[in-house]
Length: 343
Image (cartoon, rainbow, N blue to C red; front, top):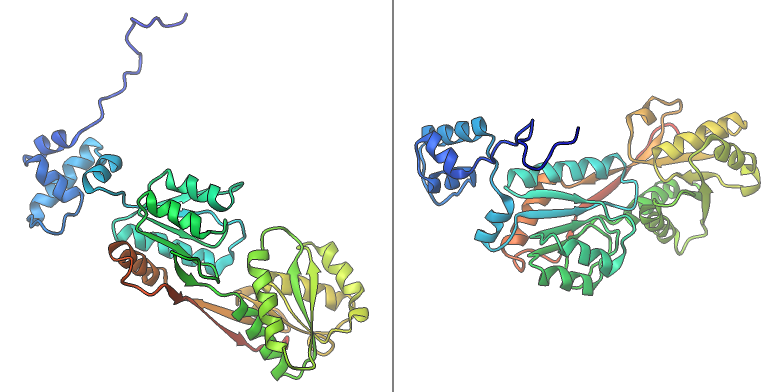
């Protein structure tokens, strides 16, 4: 039998606890509750009082209202991290995880935003609806100068891109993937290789990284007699076997793979086809995965080193406090080749 509107609910919803409830339980003023739970640095409160307020809040299940706090402060503490349209891999994934933890430690609310299906200024308008104090985007969807203006008019103090190219009005923390391809080809040139393939994934998504890496590889060979050729490969055994079958016709003596996983996939297929690594073809990957060191021959690779998430969180915080107080361009990525048995 359906319940009428006049009947009491069998599962009444408990009232939402307020800061006044916390203050009564802790025996302090509402202002003290606000100072403690918002970690207000300008007000000195004894540690026993802080512990009492936090215990009362925990006992009552009280959580400060972020929107109300933002209204009082005049802006939110939200840092928006739009989702990337590209597999980030272990290095960038670990970096973004560190960044989120460090931003939370600095008192920001980190909000990840799934941006699939949004592009350009449409994405910027969607992000602006949340009134973030800062936006840190990995480069896709691509920001435009108009998008930066939209975000700043909505209250964003800092708009930061991790892409390789500057955007007018934004801060750029450069993760320039051209360095990766350039580093790999320079290593192969120094080892005497002259016909170099660059593995580019066939799957949609990685082109945000693979395109600049290919550009960097070609730039490293510019002005020499070295051939740099794009080689398409899907992440399947069938695709790797098909590529290995036509490898002799390509006449390549070395290859730089998009990452260590693609490198290992291709190495297995080449060896199965009777093409010895590195005697017939040298292979270098990207990412320095542990599994690559366990292969025989061990996989040469390009190791990418990023600044820590803590360092970048500090830069974001400085940009929020003083948008003109940090450089518009900051390099985050360094790359170096690690030679092992496969080259």
